[in-house]
Length: 425
Image: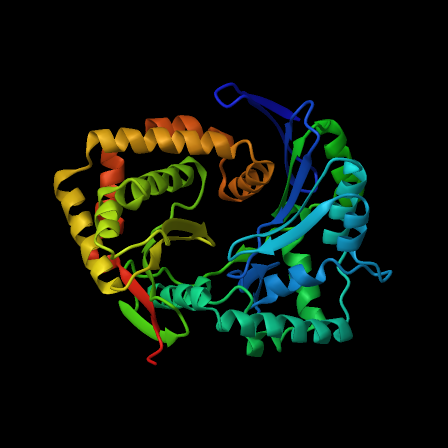
């Protein structure tokens, strides 16, 4: 295994690519009682059309999420979730637009739990009867999501921003789309996307990297399958498909999200730098210490339910800014003014340096969270960079890079506004 020291963050990383194509990252933490493992597939809700062995395959919305739900079932009738929990592990899984992650933490029985994690994720077992039962369960989950104002304001915005990219659709799909899923659909997608060559295993804790590598080879074998190629359709316009959308629901105060889409760097150091520049720029522009937020908070236009994020997933980059406000459209107007001023005059140097120091500090603190480290390493694997390389890159970012990002990506013509209003009494 390759060993690399990161003295600036006090970490050592062991990494290798196994004969089966699995990318393995291990971060030893001598003396720590907790051990954490993430087994991730480069497969999420947006991977609906793909090419494998020269054949193009289309699948309905919701397959990746459905597959995650069913993977815990074992052929002998056991449930991997129950087995892991009985062995002292705290297991779970999630599916996003771009990845599916299965993970657990434990203080004892780590190697046994790791074998179970690798075994159940690599062992598909579906029947027509169990798929039909799960369709009812996930259908209820979907209906609950459709009644959620937070979910509605988000997916309305995604539909406004993206005219055709499948990231605009709900990860769980719709009741109608999951009705098209069969056990054959699940077997086909598992064969395509759950091959070790399309996956990453990341572990942190008091563990032996060589032992982890041996267990992975023992359970998963050495065969290397071809990697599917996702097809997200033609490139999107940089401008939103719909600028403004309003919907009425049962909310105590109007919810809003302002968004824009980026031309995301595909992989490597350029992709990591774009992610770091964008997050730093947003912190300066509309973070809790920014003049923009402070001014609108003092005027009662914004409250503490306000935040920002940027999501890089399935070949896209999406800026999301929002929360609660009695006047969402005024928030957009004020944001456009702030962006225009930054574009013209640049960023205050003092504010930039304070934000960079705060970001460096929060990045270092995030390195103390085993879950964050393992998930970040896994997603970095799929995007062609190592998350541990972020600190020197972050330190090298200039105020001009952040100004340029704000000026281009948050220009007025790039922004869309999604509003959930209170129903009239």
